[in-house]
Length: 260
Image (tube, rainbow, N blue to C red; front, top):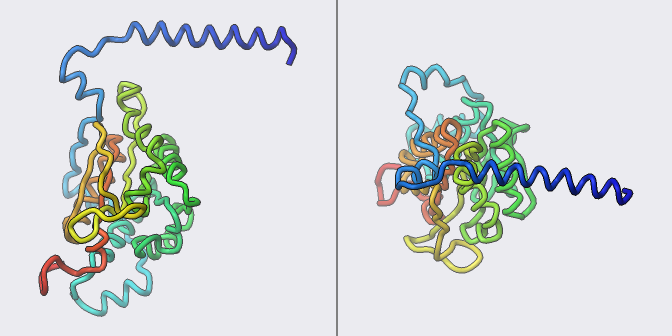
């Protein structure tokens, strides 16, 4: 580019920046606790009525291994199976729901995403082992009108995507609700009641304002909770993080002979 073209471009960019600064300086100032809360996170969306929920349910294809489980009767199933089933249900009912993560087309870590790629080949996306890309892709999907579920293998790996994670959580604050990043993040958090060692399950979690954090100990609660999390991400634009217990994934109950 010529010097004149560069000066012209610089003058145009300077004008855009000054205009944006003046507009921002004239916005109403935050002066009350209520205004802080309104800016921090989108309000909860009302739950659909049972009749409305029933109308949304579409008949979903059942993979052969699920038919085999059905023939086994009402045997208690591990938590992992309940998790897998609710993701199939959500993706069958709502074509905006997408699932992204590392190796998720092949079952993901602990086989939570088994069969999803076979049932929804265009809506299950593998990402290289880069948590910044996982969360960034989920943000892009959300801003394009989709409802992403982003799988992070272990809570420690969230460190690698921390900048993008905080971007997603504070976008509502930074834009005064003008831009929402509704998404669900699920990760393995703790093992036998406590957080684990470095590089896998972690001894801490990021809990910034504007983030919903949930954790479930049994399949029934997980299914109900994940339905609610996806509803809030899609309808309200909230960011929800589900922290899953690695120790419970292959257990049928917290107690011997207990319910699943």
